[in-house]
Length: 339
Image (cartoon, rainbow, N blue to C red; front, side, top):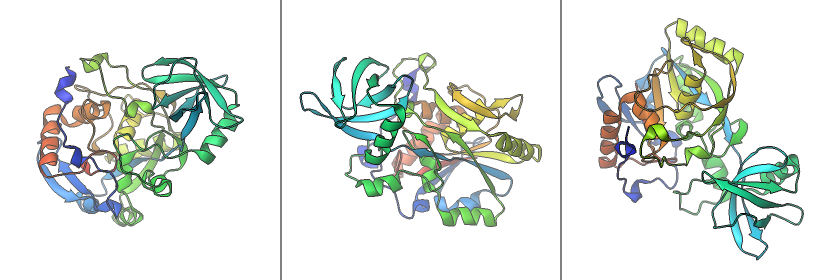
C-alpha cells in the first residue's frame, strides 16, 4: 500500500502547543466503526457515550526526563535525548545538531561519551560512566522530551506535569501515551460511578513514535520495537471479561499495539518483552473492540494503525472534518473515539 495514501495537509495553527484545561474539556470526535457516522462531543462526556459493557485499558508508562545538553570539545552546545542503554556502556541517543562519528561530547566533568555510529536516525555512543551513574545524572539534570512540533517555550516545571498522564507509574518512555492526557480524576470517578471498569498494561514508547515512514510502500517500513508487559493477573482479568462479553476499549494506539501483540488464539497471554508488531491495513484486530486516540501525524505508523482499525477512507474523511471544525492535533490536541 502506498505511503501517499496516508498523507494529508494540516494547517500549522492546528498543531496544539499546550493542553486545554481542564484536560477533559478537549473535543472528542466519535466515529462508528461499522457505518463511519461521525458526531462531535467533549471528552468529559465520555461516560455518557459508553456503558458498563466496556473495559478501559490504559498504559501506565512514565516518561523519562532524559533530554539534556552537552558540549563538544570545541565548545559547541548540543541537545541530546537519551533513548536506551544497550550493553557495555553503549547507548542509543538522538542529537539535534550535526555531529561526526568519533566526536566526543561532555555532559559534566565526570561524564562524557564518544559517538560510535549512526543508523536509522539514531546515534550509538559509548560512555565512560556506568549505566546507573548516568541514569541518576539524567534523572536529576534532564528535561522532559517534548515533541519537536511543540515550539512554545514551556517551563520545565509545567512540562513535566503537562507531558505525563495522571496514572504514569513505570519509568521507561521517551514519549507519552498522549490519549491518556484527557483523563482527569473527576472523569475517572464518573466512569467508576457508572461501573465502567479500568485496568493497566505497560508499553514503553520509543523513538519510533516520532519517526515518519520514509519507504514508498508502508509494507517496506521497519517498525520500531517497544518494551511491553502484560501481567498474568491482567491477562486473566481481561480474558474473564471477554468471556462475559465485555468490550475491550484501548486507550491509545500503544495499548492497542500491546494487546494485539499479546493475543493468541483469541486470548490475551502474559507478555514481557519487545513487540515488533506493525499494524496497517488490511490488518484484522483480534481483541480490541474500540479505540480512543489522538489525531496523528501524516505518514506515521500511528495513522496506519487507526486506519487499519476503522478503514483508511473513513479515517481520512474524519481527519478532513476535524480540520474543517478546527480540532487541535497531536500530543496536546483533541481526541477521537472509534466505537
